[in-house]
Image (cartoon, rainbow, N blue to C red; front, top):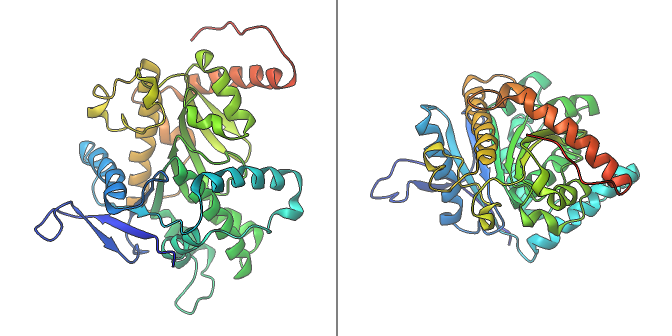
Length: 342
């Protein structure tokens, strides 16, 4: 039987020496952030490493009053890598053939995590749909952080939630409105960047070799041109905002990892100057999202979440527009090597 679990960060005691414990649910009325880690997050130790990173980030910046959780996967007989490859194919089908939108059933672990984390926020005690206002208030209190496969799990959860909302009586317009109030901040996402239903901010390195494993034109182009990618942000239609630079770390083999998010660790993990910018934007987003959950306020814009503390959103946007035009031309025809300055 598939049995994913959720751990919560708590004080270290003799009963909880590692500062975490397994919980059955995430209260709807409490501010929370839930980490979805990479595919190797198969035990308490793996899940707790993500939760500890978030706790250190919040403690370092005096953000208090938000509960921190992290999921433990149970894939059953499924292969996580094959699952991700399948998602890219499904996403393409959904772009080109809307008749195929509802043919995919979410895997068991995604369904169970959805039932634990999000379904209680849209239904009442009689399993009937809540008012849109109440549902939005409930989803404002929960934020998501994802790394690697975590983005794939949340991508599937968003598809599942939309279908479920339509089934229980929300209109398509109401479902879209509620889904857009759910914020996902993801690092090195190995998931489709398009067909997103949640509001999504992605942070990545163009030199992340994990991104080369899947047939995604955007990811493949930035990998092929990583030496020319200055810090920038792309607004991908239906895919949220993607913050990216050519190299985030001085050690290239660590490009995929989220280490460096906690500012006091940035020197330890040898961030490049470009990496400092991308991680600062991600740090801003997580801290502000946490405060939004604490204050039960609406999901704000990518600019409001990331600008400041060494991040010039307008400048990143200008760089992204320049690169997007170059990329669009490259994908249509072979062009001479680009020549532009940071």
